Length: 260
Image (cartoon, rainbow, N blue to C red):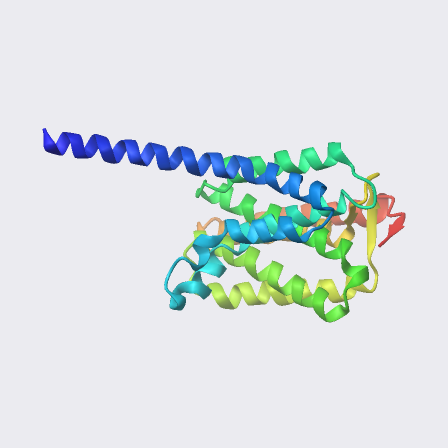
């Protein structure tokens, strides 16, 4: 009788805690929108995103760095969302686009972020990397080259580590650093040749975000095939042809008529 009561109490507490967690996550994107439009400033929304990640430092200090690396992709995505909302508010509010961004953050927090299967983890890393690069290169005109390269390195390292972690890669730090270095090199080249696609908003889509998205997809596919002992010559050739084809479409056939 007593054990049954304890189990039911714990179950009730778990359900209450889960409901509270879902409610907080559902309200966070809306709060970011209200703060951005209410204060006409990025900083309140950015502060709220950082405060929402309090669990990162809820551990002992010696675990902080490990916790930051484990949550880096989610943190990058949240910061990118806050900056996007701010950019879509100034100089003139673009409410429809802001609502779309809020809905995307809702999907991230309530559906994609809690999932830990391989496909979801890869999607988390790819989406966060793409969005962070879009934001970084939209801000690149106001940043010096060192900050842009540092941003590329952090974005690349975080995304690669997020994907490699799901495969229990032994050389996770080395391979993540290699991808970060490669992305930083692309960043250096395209920082001096920043082309972007005009989508009719304050935000432009920089070429580097699309190029890296294609390259990331190909390398991830090949890495997964190698890990599952399914890497064959035909797979490498098809992946290479697919990537080259997409890159040619992006570079040659798209109308890159805006320079950030």
